[in-house]
Length: 460
Image 1 (cartoon, rainbow, N blue to C red):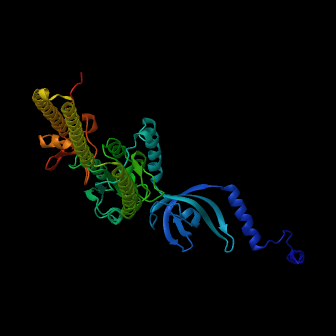
Image 2 (cartoon, one colour):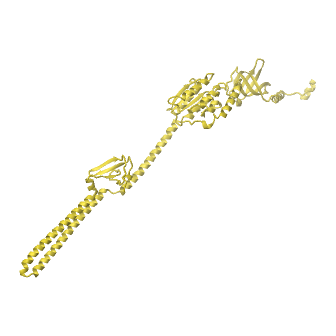
């Protein structure tokens, strides 16, 4: 068909379709201009809901239609509006469906940001070489801060985010706002002065948060200054940097003791969650109660066991008194038996004498017998008195060694405290320690005392 049309018109060139022409031009443009930098003023900027940007770049003599797809537009951090002079990195192509010549941009930034970015990289390399970014210099943030200083503009959204999130998470903390400009020529000096002021507060804050919202590289210029970096580096209290959005990095972020991607994240990083802390302490309290109950039960069982094995000293005293009484009775019965035996012998001898003596010796024998009888009686009484004295002496000796007698003489039995009995008797200064409670048992009761001091007597 194309061949016939060619002969009918007299043309020898092949006839191309529009789509073929546009595709060929597209390929030629891509080969001839793989990547170019174009500078111009933005006009007719449209940000489609798909994420694509459509705009026109123009100068005083021409205009160029441009498109930036969503994958590239998401990486743009600078503020781009109509009338802004920008520089784009793009490849030249055509929109084949309409044959429109266009540039496909993959990067865009306002004119002047290139110099700022170069200055940023040079300063970052310098401070890195000085060691200002070393992790070993990062100060530890307290787990439970009491005072937090916030260095920011009072009118910004960033300071509101910080205050709101900190009070939501940890309402007992005290927040101190140190107002300062965060943009413009005077902001560098104001931020440095604010950092110096928070380091001289009384009481001293536990940390400071340096924050502002996002913006272009030019908007964040003050946070890329060497003066602000030096103020952060020399700060005695930890500095948390929360500047811009998550993708924004500044020199302040590298120098700070902690970098937070956003102001809200900074609030979460510097404070504990009060609900988690409360849950932790509740669990700890429950464990302490359980441990106390277990320990109390074990001590109670040990006490009961010791009480069952311990004998009351009064029982021993009662037994000793009973033994003394039994000994006294046995001694008295022995004396009676001896006296009865001697009386029997005397009577027997008297009868023998009466039977064997003549009448003329009867009187004399009677007198002798009487004397003998008296002697025997006297001797018996003397022996009886001696035996009684021995019994009395033994009784006194037994009574003297009796603990109850010792108590009657003003002495005391000292023991470790117990509820109803003497407890463990303290025999040495090494049985107790200073501050321990002791019981002193007297004849008419007991005293509770505390050991104030110990003086040991050296044994020879």
